[in-house]
Amino acid sequence: MTARATTRARRTTRWATAALGAALALGTGLSTAAAPAAEAAVTTNRSVLVHLFEWKWTDVALECERFLGPKGFAAVQISPPQEHAIVNNDKHQYPWWQRYQPVSYKIESRGGTRAQFADMVRRCNAVGVDVYADAVINHMSGVGSGTGSAGTGFSPYTYNGTYQWQDFHHCGRNGNDDITRDDYDDRYIVQNCELENLADLNTQDNGYVRGRIAQYLNDLISLGVDGFRIDAAKHMDTNDIANIRSRLSNPNVYIYQEVIEGPNEAIKESEYFQNGDVTEFQYSTEIGRVFKTGQLSWLSGFGESWGFMRSDLAEVFVDNHDNQRGHGGGGNVVTHKDGQLYNLANYFMLAWPYGYPQVMSSYHFGSDWQGPPSNGGNTTRSVWVNGSPSGCNSTEWVCEHRRTGISNMVSFHNATVGTGVSNWWSNGYQAIAFSRGTKGYAVVNKENFAVNRTWQTSLPAGTYCDVITGDINSTRTGCLGRSVVVNSSGQFTASVNAMQGLALHAGARLN
Image 1 (cartoon, rainbow, N blue to C red):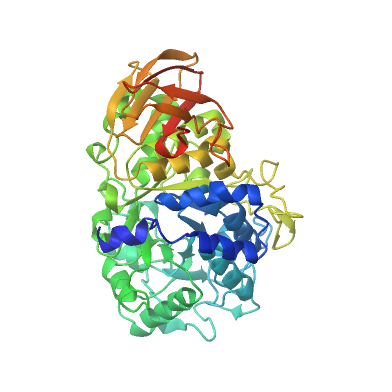
Image 2 (cartoon, rainbow, N blue to C red):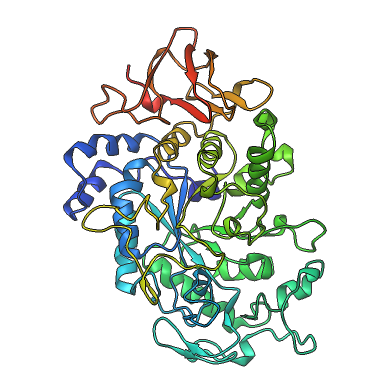
């Protein structure tokens, strides 16, 4: 296994019983009944990432201990942790994107304090969940004046104690440095001018800037952070990122870079492979096209043959925080607003062997700028209240990752790591099924009627839980959803209802 593969995939031994015991000692609230199911996760790879978008650090810590760890998630992506601008004007009141406007590199944000952040990382790591920080290092805040979330004042190109005028690009386009939609065929403009009026850091010619960014990332590494999503990486030269990475204290830290390659654009995704993985936005837009207006039968070769980057380099998702709002390469993507169709798209992503999949966990929004649920002002409302994630499945937090079918498909993905696709079947239209070697079998039915047939798998004979309807119980004696009996020929007969799925895997076998 390559060093890159080692850092992106969860090792099987990290979350041992001792770590679980340590977590219990910290008062995580995991019940004795929950422990056997949690311990079962030790035997599997951890291979799925979740983005808890705009969650507070205290909530992320609890979610790691009580849900993400036991469910076998590999990692959690958290919102940018650095001090950010506070935006409150006639048009926008505390929008989500203020987190992407750094004011300093103090770990003091809408997500919480430095102490809360450090505690969250420690607690997530203790139960086998890596923490990936969204790193905003291409730019600082919008060009203007104000006060940040830690009380730091700033003015145009002046961030006291961090950067001054000489640390920024000033591309001088007749007084307007903003990148326009017509500029993306010009590499210089894309990487030296300003994205949405955000003060663009000079990472190319300024050694101080490179060193200061590395100092910030190393601070996060010292707090236990395991990886970074590099925001707006396309707007930085790949060699600038390589130079910053070379200064990091942990050479094996996981890196994935936001690069959206549009047709006929000057900057290509492949330029960034030298630094780490890259977000494959085509995956999201094609999933959206197929599930919304196409045929699932088209998906038999989904992946590199569709023009996607190599699977081992790709970080993928059905939707992310940008394109679910129509930004960041947004198209006709599937989101939580699409109801059961969204669940089906996630079942397919987690059953199919391509890329490092990221599950989205959102909040409800009416406008594309709306910030997270709030207690008023710049204070985010908690998801966890009185020991329960009562904020989930409400009118505020969506928590898609907690839906039974989606969360249990994480175990399917973990159980089938390293296996290919066989026994492909479709009805020629909107129902598909396939094996993942001898480790798994999945059915996705987008038809408006049930599909009832005998399905051919490569699974060993036995009784399996359909993990989309419910997991195996804590004593491994029964299913919390329906059970399926596979015969000695690898066959089973079952009906899969309209707009539903079915998934069996080796880790959910009863006998």
